[in-house]
Image (cartoon, rainbow, N blue to C red):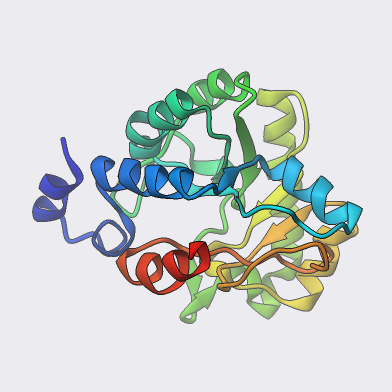
Length: 228
């Protein structure tokens, strides 16, 4: 079923605001490739930043939050065909279930895909991906101890199913606090917000790194000017 059909059948705001159809996704990849943008993995990006040398090219790192079934069924086959790496941030406690009307990928599927060198699996919490008092539960002051337990549980699941802990964490709704950031940085976990910005050789990786959430507006107002 195409995204256009799904949009007509659901009032899920995330699908209406953030989803793009397969043809648009493929055209965007072609647009970037034809203009010399190089797609690299999360680990390659970190290694380049740590070296601190001026970047000679334009690079893009692709990420997907929540890791729902549409990414698995529609997005990953295209990336594999193009041999483009990506990172998927999974909500470890609710894999295989429905979240906000969207079916999430199961652990068996994640385990199968993690064997592909193009795919990196990161964390998007275990069971704290929700809003509380109109803000992310992760940054709610009285949830700090619960967050630490949630993080430990998510890493236990990563080890159980994939054999190793995750090195990357995406903040739900892009929100963080200094205390949470310090906790994750002390565990050598690289974090990501939803603040629009660029990563370069001077970026401080002890802070959360910026990302651009691609929709029609940011594609035309942020990505296209950056490529030009």
